[in-house]
Length: 560
Image 1 (cartoon, helix red, strand yellow):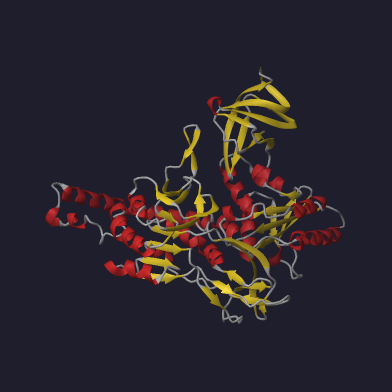
Image 2: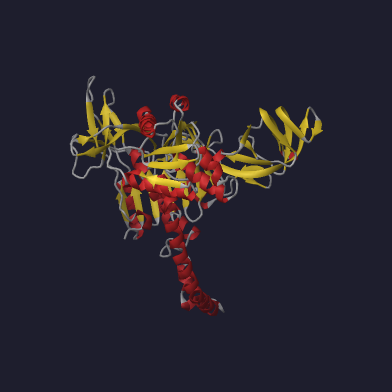
């Protein structure tokens, strides 16, 4: 098997890497397709052209060159076994398929990075494309929907970035990779990155798992090394001599930084030979082997328990990845876990045309649920279809006691944090509220599960949320919104905030802090209104001292 997989890299890069006996495999995220749309009404059908081996996760190093896309043409015909395709219409004369390939690679690259590996990315300008994508059936390409994809943020934890171009670059830091890169900084950059931060000892500081390797003339980061739990990601600008840099990096720097990745290249390999073994080392190695053997049975038992636990909780991942019957079954399992008294899967018992997917008995009557998994986001008709079914059920029951809920797993081929959240536009949310029906995402159900496990929510809170109207966020069910801090005073762990007129807060209350999908708890230590200490207050602007410091860009809720 090859050691290195190269996505869209030049022949020169692969040749340079193979000089010392390493093997490489070519792969591609796709190409830029020229489209012959010459006049109004012209439209073409294009097919994805990304390609990589199924065992991609087994490689040691992945190199991705995003700087020089291939330009291709397509015949417009659909090859056998094509499952999805794009529609391109006038005046579009080219379509970059690489962002779609990057979105498809997302899960694979995350699995790759989660193990001991090195990922090297040559960035150019950010590229984001909104495709018209649809499934291919017996009669060709069916109905299409919008699907947005980004060429830059295709791995979890990619730092925030913005577009900026230039040619003036210089190395940053004394890292061996930075030192090497400083000798190759001829070329250009098209993207600058922000240094990620982390909350440490009561304040936000630059994350230690991230280091700049090069900056531009303004001191902005254009190259970085990002240490993940097991793997390492190296982000680089569009340097001219990629082949020379990659050859030196893989053959001279990486083996000494991560000797286990390429032991055959490590400069210290010969020191492991028995002829040069240090005193007492073999005895310790023998003891270590005995310890490993002693723990093998325990590890095997843990592996069995791990597999059983994953199987029991698989429905949670199905909420984020599946569509059709598998997604309906996952939502059914979730509703049973929420302890609804009766949850019925309709397709099991009905020979009618497609109706609701689930019926849930609730104290006020009946809740009917439609569940969808989509490549993109929901259309207006998809959001409102459940209302037509509700009307029919009310007619059949002879009373108006049926609630309607639409649950969607949107943009399901993307990791949830890369999706549009919420996926409903303002009009869809307002229409749902006026029409007394609910809109809910499977990702919010996934988040709510862990908040319940941590005691920040109850199952009853989420069951009640199912019956609300408009856009529903169950992660804040049962909580009262306080708002976003106007100011934060780190020294006193205090915030200035303007709370709603209907909310009363008092010393000792529990406050839930929400930031970027993460929830934590703290408590109210003291309250001041116009510089006067009070024990309780209702509505308006006030100062609150908390047990822990909170970031300014967060949302605070009062936990009953």
